[in-house]
Length: 314
Image (tube, rainbow, N blue to C red; front, side, top):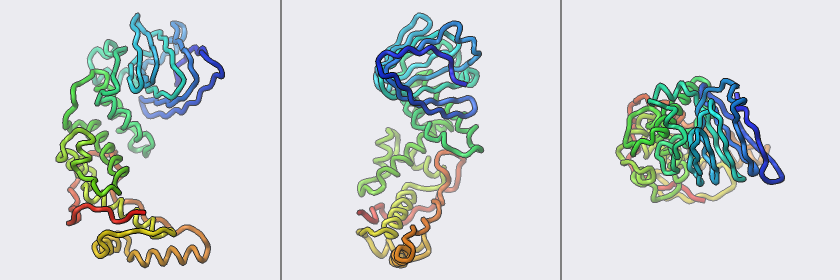
């Protein structure tokens, strides 16, 4: 259920675009709108919604219980849905998340008193929480676990802990694992990419990053190699040229991964395009487990015995 509010447009034309995602005990609304003021009056709070909301926005002012907060870009504040509130938004995008109050009360003392305090954009728990929300598109079997991790991270954001350190808490470890995998996926073609650089970007130690990757059943070298092989496969099945730095080593890895030589895959792709102009079947899904959704310890996979280097570029 969404909250009942009175909305007053502040500038024409008035528009609102919104997307709702929901998990057990968690609702996330991504929206974009013109400038507006919304008010949750005493009459409207009778809808019996007992949740705590976090607003992440820019140029936003909010007031509740006689207190007022101004948000700059990336800042956040928590509000009580059972109490009247006034919020004024400037034009632009924002994110609002509602979590069952009971779930937060299990994780933090006096949770009501933690609301309506500015959570600055530099908060580590807030950063991990926002990054973790990417996992909302997950399988039904994992929805409960993801929701639980969201509850943990939101409670940490509300209590404004100091640096979280290299924690083994499931929510923190899972959020950081996904952050590491996202960084690797975005930079795997960079010859300078290393475990140390990933750790520096996340402000944690290389050893901790490696331990997180091993918990997902892979290693830094294996993950980078897999992404580069997938990239090479894609280039070989298209009409594009690729440049290989170590041809013999690449051929061995490629044949081991896809059961054919690069030349064979290239020939197959050209033949199929010539016959029907249909796309060749893409390679099987990565053998690595769905990232970030389980932190059960697994045996570390043996890394390839070579230094990381990009296999191809376009």
